[in-house]
Image (cartoon, rainbow, N blue to C red; front, top):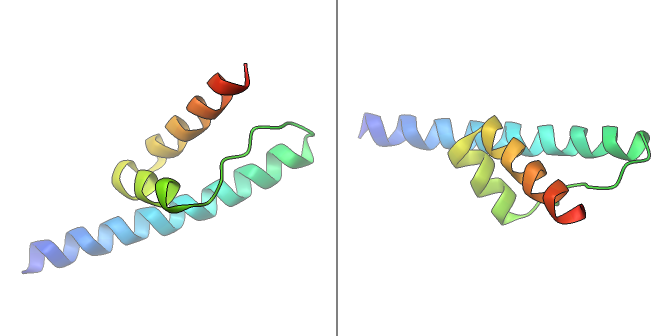
Length: 68
């Protein structure tokens, strides 16, 4: 039971901090006049929760790939 609770807490912390990071990265990109913001939605929540910050980089990488 302890392992499950640790996993859930770890997932939620990564997901919440990931969404906060996405928000600030989007704000920074808009301030620089660049397009390419990643939406805050269930997919980005799950991606950042499962993969952490590499997942956020993956979301932005995919987004910039489709822009170009």
